[in-house]
Length: 339
Image (cartoon, rainbow, N blue to C red; front, side, top):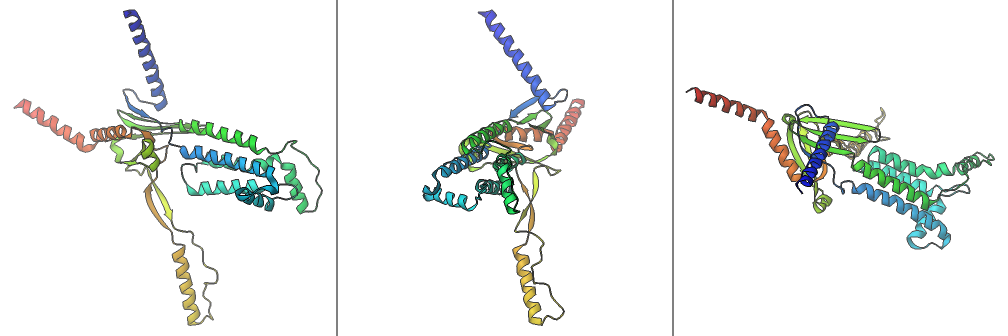
C-alpha cells in the first residue's frame, strides 16, 4: 500500500513539474521568477460571439425557409419575402448579401467584444459567399446591365442556406472557443504577464508591479449573474486608457453657409447662425476612458477577488514607499543592534 502511495506521489510531482515547466515557457519567465496565480477568461466571457453565430444561423434558416414558401409567406416571413422580391433580379438575389453586409457594418460600428478584426472578416466572408457561389449569375446580372450575353457556368451548385448556415456557424463557434482559450494571464513574483496567441497573431506584455498606478474592477450585468469580472491595470505609461470620440462627426462645412461679398447683413447673420447650429450638431469631444482589452487585462475572469487582492499586495510590496519603509526599518534595526 505504501508503495502505491509513493508511486502516486511521484507521478503527481512529475506532472506538477511538467506543468510548471510548460507555464514557464508560455509566460517566458526569467530565472528565479515564480508564478503565483494564473487565469483565463470565463466560459461566458465571449457570450456575445456565440450569440452572433446563432444570429447568422437563424438568418440562414429564415432566408432558406421563406424562399420555399414564396408568395404564400405571411406575417414576418411575408415581410422577408417582400424584401427578397424587391432585391432580386432575373439572375441573382442580393437580399441575403445586403442583410449580412448591414450586420457586418453595424457590428463593427458598435465597437463591442464582437467587433474584432477576425469577426468582421468572417461576417464579410459569409456575406459575399452567395456572390462567389453564384458568380456566373452575378456575371449574368452585370452583362444584362450592359446589354451583353453571358452563358458561363463556373460553379455547378447553388447556395444552400441550410448547409452553409450550419457550416459557417459551427466553424465560428469552434473559432470562438479557440479565441477564448487563446488568452492566458499570470501574476508572478516579479510582474503581471498577459499572453495571447490566436491563429497568426501573437502578443506578450509584461508589467512590473511598481509601474501600476491603479487597479479597476468592472462587472457587467452578465458578469454579476455568472460570477465573473474584468480586472484592468492602469500604468503611468497609459496602458489600459484609450481615446474615445463622442459626438457626430466631422469638420465638414455646411452647404450654402459661405458668405459672399454681395450678401446683405441679414443674409450674413442667417448664414452665421446656420454655421453655428451645424457646428453644434457636429461637435466632437475626445475623452480618455478605460476600455478593457482582453490582451491587456484580466478579461472576464472568475474568482476575481483573489486576483485583485494579490495585485494590491504585490503592488504594495514593490512600491517605492514600501521599499523606503523597509530600508528605514533595516537602518533603525542596525542602529539598535550597535547600541
